[in-house]
Image 1 (cartoon, one colour):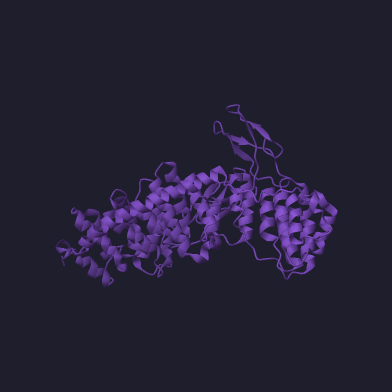
Image 2 (cartoon, one colour):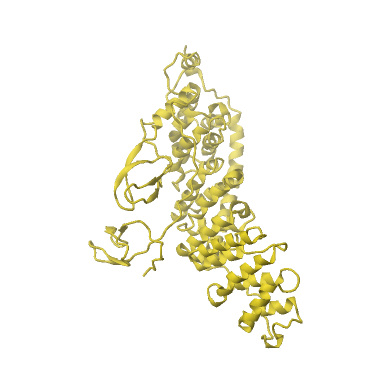
Length: 538
């Protein structure tokens, strides 16, 4: 049976039977529910979970597009518009805009995160490129053409898709190194290019995928980011796809993080460890290239820890413990709030993540009271302990009333088996703090004397050997030192799985790119023209 926390009842009134999948109506007072379809009985868990992080991107609209092909791309993708959706809380239908929105049900107030990002109704099918001519190009340049797409870019893509000679096909794909071909026309025909890349080896898949990275780095028109990533999504989530596409997605901003993590998780569950490792490798690019987006990147990563498979979980844990994690997860309050949620969802991860939060030392009583209020608000004791360790450190120049507030707050924890370890850690820090033993600690020692944890009593004598507060002879004579910290088996397994996968992926990719590089250099020497003899008609 799952305990229902006081004041923490989820708003959802519907559930799904874990046995047969039938929908169930739930009541707030129920702790067990019997399925009316299959008869199985299930315990009812009610939790509140923080909403997933998201990154807003500019929307592409016909009215704002500067170039003809951008206007046509906006028309092809379709404008965002409200659609009928069903609330997961009460089941009522309401109008909801599915493009980058958090929706609030007007009936029951449930806030719902739209899981499918960047959804826009497709106004028309994305047709294949056609073989255009020099005349088409000249008419378009003079503004006398009704053709939708940039003629030169469309013709290049036609060559890539239809050239029968492989070396020449690669030579055409290498023309994406020229930024003139990085535009809305390329976005429109991108599904055809990515389908070809998926079934090709690195020699062709690499140059084709290069256009994705450039589209995601196109600072002149950031409105192309969203439709580019929307087009990439089904290919990135396919474990049979090209790993080169993953590396190009990593050149964009934080919006691609979810796509890469979800792609890695799907691949790992399918046994495609090389694909999963390359997706995670690419996700590292996003961290390294988008410093200002680290807070939202942290949330995207953290709130996927609840369901990630071991290899992908290991990558997130690796980032958390690394020096890089100090930048990505630098907000201690956000991380401690996550630890509170994690203690319900995946308690085996808490002790590992709890070592990361760091906050500056407290200097004033008002600041200490605010932090103690935050600690008290944590719902789970492991989260309270982590918060105390991170937030209750005191600066040497702080006045005495700061320490007095902390000691008064901590003392009851000494009687709680789940909190005494955290209380002991901080009391030892306070004893080491300043000259001698501060008055609030003296008063605590006089009240508790030999009922204090043994290591706290030892700390008192280490600080002031000739003190009159405790008789050292009454303290057990042997001390074996601090116990060695051990990783939870699930954490150790995840870290090991990621380490093995990424090492193999790096070695494999380095070897493949070394082989492909020579081929690319040879292909660059070919004289392939976008407007060849067959397209020179006037």
